[in-house]
Length: 457
Ligand SMILES: Cc1cc2nc3c(=O)[nH]c(=O)nc-3n(C[C@H](O)[C@H](O)[C@H](O)COP(=O)(O)OP(=O)(O)OC[C@H]3O[C@@H](n4cnc5c(N)ncnc54)[C@H](O)[C@@H]3O)c2cc1C
Image (cartoon, rainbow, N blue to C red; front, side, top):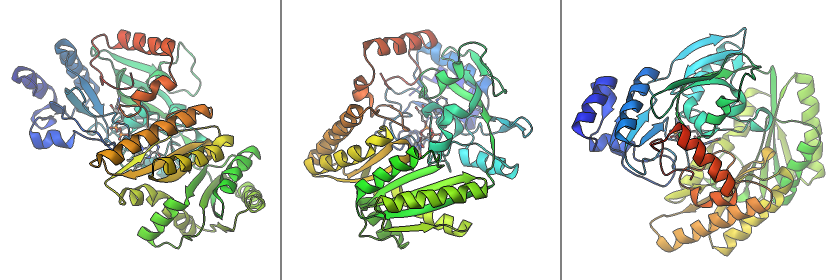
């Protein structure tokens, strides 16, 4: 519990209904979408940057940990209060403060839900490319702090590529504004990027200036089935190597296809080894040419069936299985460990083969999904944390998967960040010198170490 004197100060800033400390309320903020849990001492729901600045001044003075929180959808334990403290939940700060169609930018508060913004921008003929699959609930602040990406990442990159500037509150309450509203801006060191992927360790993002694109006039998707998964992953490398830049290029393996079909009954063939989903967008004639070329590549690489969507309803139908996959896998057992290792696209076949060998070695069910077009692979281990022996096998399997990804020239995380779950493996990526830079940076921006302690390092 936070001392009453401090609780009083926090209530005075955020208002009575902006301060929570009952056991029931704290429980709601004790977990995220990972498997870990820890109770915070208090939750504050501020309405403005100024309020956050005042809260930070108190927390810094009292050396109380502060954990920024959006929707709590992260999969790495990033928003869990492992050392107790105050959770600052940004969900009330969800305004679109400025929208410039002419200059193609918007200034939004960090608690705005990604999809709410997409729906608003779409009405103006524009869109914000980052599209994490959790976009119906995840916030822009959370997207920035995790540097989230989504299926569209193959063509449009990750959140960092679409943030022109941001407002952030540092540990001592100082408010900084980075970047600006112009697409070109190289005045000084790029402080905006510093906050992208910083997982709440360097400051609390309260506003962001988003770069927008015109909605493409046309899009088309293909659904492709393979008797051999190797052929599917080789197709991925060939499509990327052909010069085509698809919007999305997703893979689902036999395990996932079967689980989705059993749950959703959408007509997916259960006897195939893999499915690819490919989407292109742009000018209609160009898209149609690309689709023809992709279809040819798929067939040359051994595809047994190719379906091409000819209208919006068919598009929706093709993508339904992919969108349902994590939910369906999660229903199999009490826990679904979803990792996000990323390898160079040409190493995808070896990565997937290696995951299957690891599944056999540890006698585990591992389904594989991938944002294959950028090598971002999602092994999903379905397990039960209460079964100690099986849980140990699952943890060992994850360690092996991480090592394999790094050996293949890849990395631990393409999307979900480090949080607490990947922290033990950070030394596969960071050496002593890199850790020193990170620690020095943290010391300068947060000398008392109050921002999201216990994460990443
Ligand atoms: C079903 C599902 C699908 C997903 N799909 C994807 C996907 O396709 N791609 C992808 O990249 N991720 C995906 N994720 C992971 C997650 O949704 C993203 O990382 C998302 O960006 C987190 O946003 P959030 O608002 O939930 O943040 P939270 O989970 O609340 O927080 C995430 C981290 O950011 C910090 N943080 C939050 N807000 C701020 C802020 N304003 N300032 C500073 N730090 C802050 C927190 O302290 C924490 O460390 C998925 C998760 C689920 C459950």
